[in-house]
Length: 286
Image 1: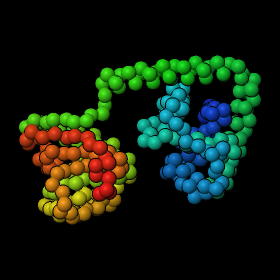
Image 2: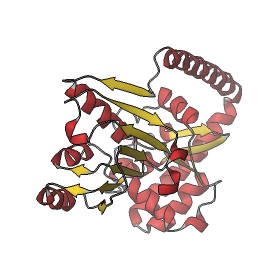
Image 3: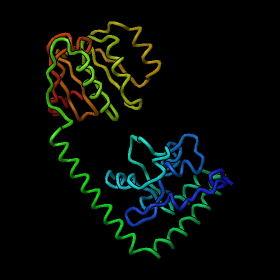
Image 4: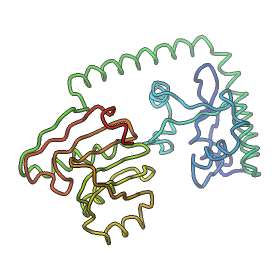
């Protein structure tokens, strides 16, 4: 039997009710099944067998559901699922059973049987205490909505987004700090347009998510050796030589456009501004 079962972990404590269904987190299933690559292995198995996993078997939580779950979940406090970049998927009882068949291992089958038994126990427990759970769920949603409204008010008082930021000569750290925060916002793709590329660009790009594809459009490359070294580690980077830009721009996921008043290699050396612009003004170039 799987080591998790041997340790007699209460699987039923890993079952939650969401959208009126009993479900388990992808991270908990990956842990129980002993997946070496964590949720990546679980999600890849689903991706390779999409026809076997309709939405009634597996679905992704929305932000409100995830925050409500985080407020009461124990596994997040013990490490699994902590600091996730993406909203998690959850599996219903049927989804868990199907997952065991596509993982194709004795461990998956044995663990799945234990999970099925836990689902049955939990279902009986919920039925016996239905009224109490309904009252608790309503209180939790009311508290969550209250917290979200407070956060919205705080965000309006101290907006995280900016439209324009002016930097003066010598404000080098502040300039690079803001630029790195912009770079980190990219989820899939980033385009940097700057006529003069040097090592500074690659130092900044090193802060991006490793899954983000980076495109650099430039007129002149000063340090070709640095580029080759960078691409050895960050292979999802492409360089394009262009000669039809005067100003500097950063484009995130083809949705956000930032105008940079100075070359990235000279940030903070003279007075300049970083401004957020309407993406429609440059969409024809994408």
